[in-house]
Structures are given as structure tokens and as C-alpha cells.
Image (cartoon, rainbow over all chains, first blue to last red; front, side):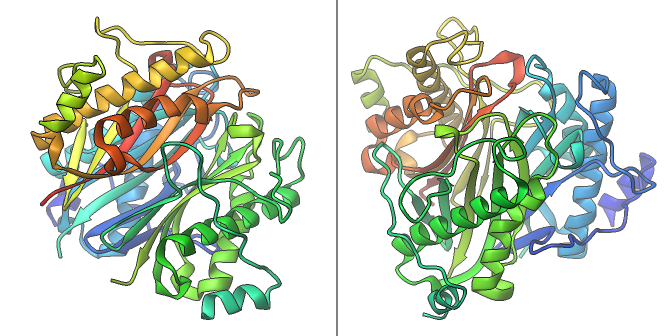
Length: 153
Length: 153
Length: 153
């Protein structure tokens, strides 16, 4: 339970995994890869962080939103594989930032997720990623991230 | 041919698979995974459903467009693997909705694709997915979806 | 070194691979797949091609930017696998074009990358892809592309 102890050390707790109410799921495992759905920034009270980063939210708030997304992704990942210590490597993130056409600091926002993953998993948490701007996201959430993870057999 | 019979039951017919006229292809298989290109909503007459959902199109029309995209994806998938009954699991969709910056119902649009996949494949059709907003898509198509599918060896 | 000879034949040289200064990496290999981060259009002098295609840049300049992205992706790929001739198949591109809401020629832009990949790898370079419009990209780069490649064991 090293990964979850790391989370506790930095003052974070895995939220309960949420099950989508539609014909899709939070995660699908195929071979040693787990493909996680796009997740949003759920606060501890269950509400969503919404608005466009750089306009309705500051960069720092955007960073915090991406950090929450990473935490929610880890909750779904645990729901799929049972134990976060089975993570062999975080492979890839697609980090999508809700923003206006002139916003250019998407990487600084998505660092909120990348930093948390490395805090939790160390070098295994270092991933390939894209950090891009979106004109609109579901429910006006500020950040949406999807993730691919390699897990032990 | 269970998958194609399911399609017939719900009144749909696979369109002919279309081959892109450029240096890319509709689908690439690597191991047991098939990665499908982003596909658009082709009508039965071969024309494209275009315009921004929530502005030029209603939500219901967007749902219908996503359903058409799923059908076209299945046509390309059949073109790649020969028989849709070889599908072991639909792994992941990236569902992109052409919309304005204030549109927030991307999931309800992409449900058009998710619902069809579950109608055709049952639980094997349940996938991870992201449903996001795009400011612009090729030829102004209303929906573009790319898909990853696990197939039998 | 056939792939690099092809590059030389068409007058291109691999730039040095760049290492991101953050908690992510340019590429992650898992099994026979290499997932490459979203890369941007770096000029020979190290500067970035920026601006919205169709507004600040012409379509031709956008094509050229996508071609540069492909070259930079190949540099990162070589950094990961050592030798580009280990490429078995370019599997998938997600090609993202920085543009305004009325731009519809994303495929013609991303062809700049697709054409280079086929020039370098022949049929192994033919890939699945999506070519889509983004309202904003990091540092206002004109094109960002992420890539999945299958390599020899």
C-alpha cells in the first residue's frame, strides 16, 4: 500500500470511485494496459470545479483542479485493479484544459496532475502526455484528463 | 454474425467502408488492439452531418450524429478484421463534439455512439471514453470519434 | 539506418531530442508500443512556429508546421528506441491544429506529418489518425501531434 501511504503523507485521500450512469465505464483493462475515461475535477464534497482557466479561474486554481483530476483517476484505477501498487508505469495522459482561445499555459495547469503522479509513484509515475486547450468541456469542468497505465500481470 | 444481426434488428445497415485518400488509413491493428482513425457522421446518402451541436444542431440531432459515427466506425472495423464477432471488447472512445464555448452537454451527444455500441455488442461494448468539446472539426462535421478495440487473436 | 537516410535524401536532419523540464517525458514504451507526448513545431533554430492556422498562418505554412512536428517526434522516438529502423508500424496520430472556430481544413494541415512519415517509413508509416481543431495550444504553437508507434521486440 505504498502508493496510498504516499497520498496520506501529502494529505490526500482517495475519493470513492464513481460509476458513470451511462453505457460507458471508468476504466477498461486490455492485457497489461488500463485505459481510463476522461475524468473531471471533483472536490472533496463531490461538487465539480468549473469555469475556464485563465478567465474564471487563476492558473494556480487550474493547477489545483488538475491535481484533483489525478486523484479521481487514481480512485478509478484502484477500482479497476484493486491495489495501486500494481502500477508498473503511468504511460500517457491527455490533459485537456477548458480555456479561451488566447490561453497558452496548458502545461502549467496539467503539471498539477503530473506532479501528483510522480509524488505518488516516483519514476514509475513519469508519463508521456499532451496538454491542450479545449473551447468547452462537459458541465463546464475546468480540466478533463484521460490516462493509460501499465499494470503488473 | 451476431453483431450484424443486432444492427439489422435495430434497423441499421453497415455502410461500405471508406478508404481515406491520403497517407493514412482507417484502422491499424497492433497485437490484439485495433486503433481506428477519427471518423465523422456520414449519412446513408454519403453526405456529412455538419454544424455546431447546440447551435446549428439540437442535442437530439447531435446524438443522432454520434450514432452515425459509431456505425461508420463499425464499418471500418469490419473492413480491418473481417467479422465484427471477433470483437472482444470496445476499449476506448475519444468523442469530440463540434460546439461553441458555452456548450456543456458533450456526454449526452456521445451517448449516441456509446448506446449503439452496447446495443450491438452488449457488455463487450462498454468502453472507457472521453466526451469533449472542439471549436472546429474537419469539413465542419458535428462529431468526430476515434476508437480502440480489443479483438480475438 | 534506412529511415535516417530517407530523411537526408529529402533534405531533413533529425533535431536533437529535447527533454521536457517537468514531471513528464517525451516517450514511454510499454511492450511493443511507444506512446509519444504531444510535440510542437520546433524550427531548426529552436524557436516555435506559433499562431492560428488559417488566420495567422496560411494552410501551406500549417502543413509545413505539421511536417516539423513529425520530424521532432522522430527525434524523440529515436531517443527512446535508439534506431528508427526498429519501427514496425506507425500506429496512430492525434493531430491538433490551433485554429479559429470556422477553420475546416485540419486534415490538409496534418497531412504535413502523415506525408513525412510515409516518405520516411513507406507503408510502415501509414497510420490511423484524427485531425482536429483546437481553440488554444501551449505557447500558441500552431500544431501539436501525439503518436503511437509499434516497434520490434
